[in-house]
Image 1 (cartoon, rainbow, N blue to C red):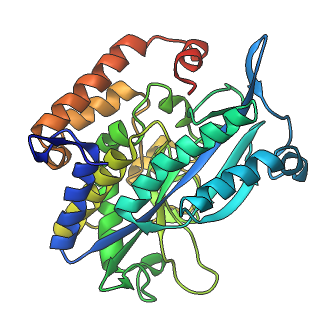
Image 2 (image 1 turned 45 degrees about the horizontal axis):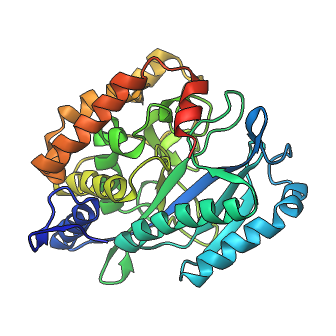
Length: 345
């Protein structure tokens, strides 16, 4: 819902920020459709603490059998709320799950993300389980991301595909991606806003630890999935997790992309390999940079980014930065165990 103060939209309302960003896109003749792709763990509370609800492998049918009741109930509950479920499978970590929902307009996508998290947690609780979206729970198991999938539209036409374009993408799509990449070190303060987020953002972790984009490249921060029936119809930002406020994360990503379109920014050459396997010299030559490795670095980048700060507005940006800075100061020296104990929900 929208927060209102004295009959006017409250300056620090996250949902109003996204509404204003959507209006800015419409001012450029564009609309954005999006979807949040959630990974989460199902855990059991034991005498030793929280432990995985299973020890199965990636995409195991055994995991599907073990959790059929809870997953079916989650899916049924989402569908009953008008949220179409498109795909489910057990993810890489023990007890880790992924449920994907259909794309929709940007504002509804953020609303659905709130409902998704609340629904998953509530249904898990009904089955004596704990659902955790924390980016990194176990040091030696996969982290949980929440990739945002984007498509850009004009007059009900998807603007992404272009058979003449690089990687099959239109100039507008590449400019939008260029804007996101340009602002990504700052954007991460909003899309990966917890101290724990950066334990997931590591090379070779399919998390987008390097600033770059590529076709089907799961190590690039922006991945363009190929489409076997034709040209790409969407792209995904991988440096996102579910500790983010979806209105702020999606709104800021749209603001960054619109800046790229407005300034006709040129996307760098697509990356076809795992950047983590390149030497530092090769990465520099290709314009590939390691993204911030902790929340403090991302906060410092955002503090210098006038495009995103102005999009947020002075009151919202001041409040957001104050909270993030306080959390960074309080938690920057914590060990993983203390982070999980405090932030697991």
